[in-house]
Image 1 (cartoon, one colour):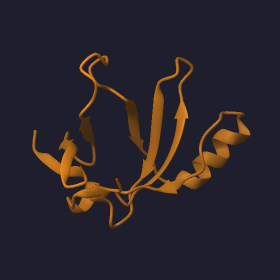
Image 2: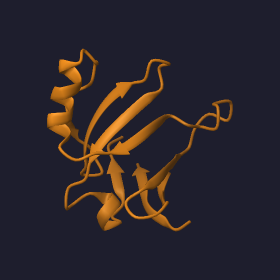
Image 3: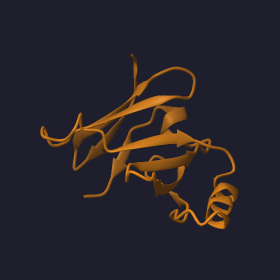
Length: 107
């Protein structure tokens, strides 16, 4: 798989995206070796994120407010019934997923 872009903090790469076809990516981050495969969450691309959040809330599904992430994509978070975190994200023209630009996070 081809690398899409890096996540960096304090001048050090701590993660990256692998291109998995079309607009689909696998996020890879440093993590605890004891963590189950270092999987932190599942991310799904959506369109109309704000409307989707409203819809989920009308169904009494707890979901975070949409926020613009460091990768310039809109994102909102919820959990499945087992507690697995799910990121819903909507690309913008400046999203690292589309531009390939590194994603720099604060310290």
